[in-house]
Image 1 (cartoon, helix red, strand yellow):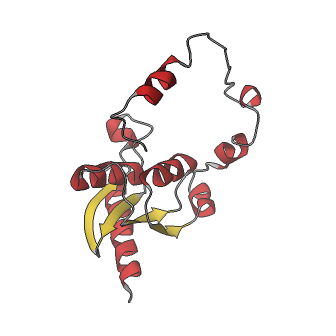
Image 2: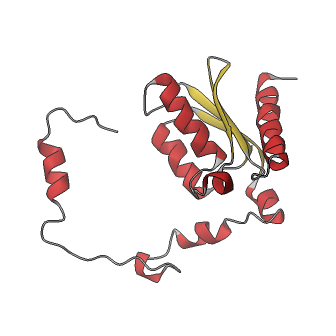
Length: 156
């Protein structure tokens, strides 16, 4: 059995245990130098937090562990293909790569269908099911202007 399969089995075990503990069926780990530095299961319902997906929770913990908001030398192993929100977090964290055990269609068959989000992304913001309205406010750019003037900024 290869290392990737072993790490995926660990993520699957986290997901299975989380179901037994009353949580969602998802688990994720972050690995650096072939060592687990963070792990989490889905905490959406226990934490009353719709962003507490296993991948995001594991990324948060890994960033705290490494003392950095980027994880370019790390790999994420997750029990299921990341949803669009988690995919965004993966790219923002600059992870090296991702391995997953089930795909989005497996998740949909279990009642976790995020295809509606994928369908929303290419739509114009005002035409999405949750309409997003752009309002031009004269001072709206002032935070970006302040950022651009800041000499001590940390780019991400």
